[in-house]
Length: 214
Ligand code: AMP
Image (cartoon, rainbow, N blue to C red):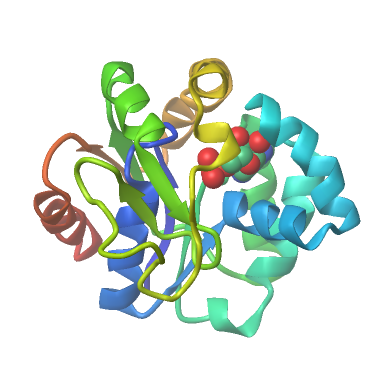
């Protein structure tokens, strides 16, 4: 069973690696960023609320995000395993996750993988990143350009509003102030694996597989 938490700064490659993990291990990816972007697109109450935070590169409040994840993890397709991508991002979120898994869902986290990429790589990765509006798949103008105007799923390829330089700096600051502390939170669990996220995605996926077979 793989119930995984994927840590790492924006642009570390969590989405890219999650796609491979999903295909290989047939488990579901839960990306809180994707859920929020879908809500923004659909113009729901949640979307309207989240948009202001997202546009500024700030975190959406813990209570909103925790509620979303609680509902999502209770869905039947999570029974065979899941990857949490982009959650938790704060200590209260991590504490709420432990509580909901043990008290409500009778599950536990099996692997916490921290994908590490220094800041100097992030700006180039994110300013060049292009994303599918429908499936969230990531491309890069230089390193992984899309083969046509549209994504392989047929969706429109866009430059995310928050993948622009001003917002990226805020997102990195938020990461260093609020999210990077999660590593020490999980250190005591014995299930934390630190992984170098710089380099070829195929080579990184091999390292991910080594971890997931442990
Ligand atoms: P991501 O696609 O994971 O980079 O998330 C995009 C944006 O969605 C973030 O910059 C936050 O504004 C919001 N967001 C996603 N996940 C969370 C979370 N766990 N807690 C708070 N805000 C989040």
